[in-house]
Length: 365
Ligand SMILES: *Cc1c(COP(=O)(O)O)cnc(C)c1O
Image (cartoon, rainbow, N blue to C red; front, side, top):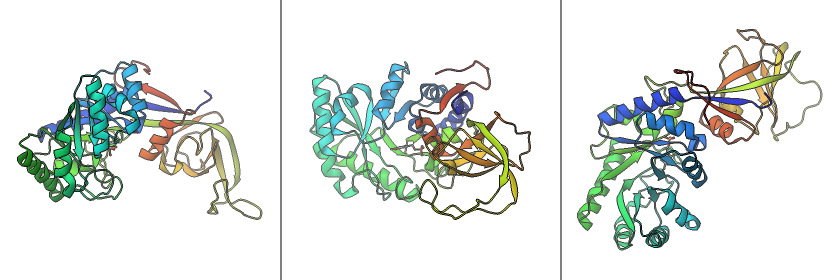
């Protein structure tokens, strides 16, 4: 086994999706499962769909191409704003996209007309997180212009929070989104079937029963993948936090001092490393590094193991306190956080293995 590998438990992801979908359903909210954190992995998308999500949301057209090519058959939502340069693809591959620029809507309209189809859009409103979305004052003029574009159907309003500005969803900002939708409906005599309130940061508000009634759609990734909400990264009741495990092989296992010897300069990444003197320690060097993973986001499954640091291709861990036996050639296991998961999924040097813990059906793509 030359590469480190990431095992992905599809059954745990399916279960997590079901827990989140059931919660949302109880509050009359539909869930789109978001696979951008796992590069649109088809096995994970299928697990989410088995768990009851109504569609798959992706940020990258490449991932959408891969999902379609792998035969994943469902509605697809494009989460990242469509680029002007890819409107043909968007109209062809995507059932609904999130939008905030009139120039893009005009181009999507042209593309849809050329294909004699209709493209559904959700208009994004910025509720204060200052990532994508229209400023509420500009909403009416935007909708007025958008309604004149043939081939474009506005199916709802959406908002995204807790991503750039760290603003959390509240009864107030969600109610504001509903009010904007009602204002648009009245001003233009249209109905907006979808109000897409947010992402994994909205779960606590939903569970508390304080999510305003008309919010009826969520786009959920991290909570399904890693089993926690994202305003405080609290474990979500009834979900598995451990669907993903990174396994790396020991390349060197030796007892060495815990503090480097000699005159000290910067490390490989321009930092001055800090060391705690623990005397002699038993250290393992693993075949995974910063090229593959964000090591700050890894947690050893064996809680007696401590991550000391990493360079591009090596991670160094203190195994002195390991609870189990550790030998040359063994693999050590780690749980990744979202950033580490993203890096591992993106690295071509990490094998991805989708497994089924329940039916032991072996690996799929
Ligand atoms: C990433 C993303 C989501 C999903 O966010 P999670 O925190 O993974 O649930 C939802 N909506 C948009 C627009 C996104 O970019």
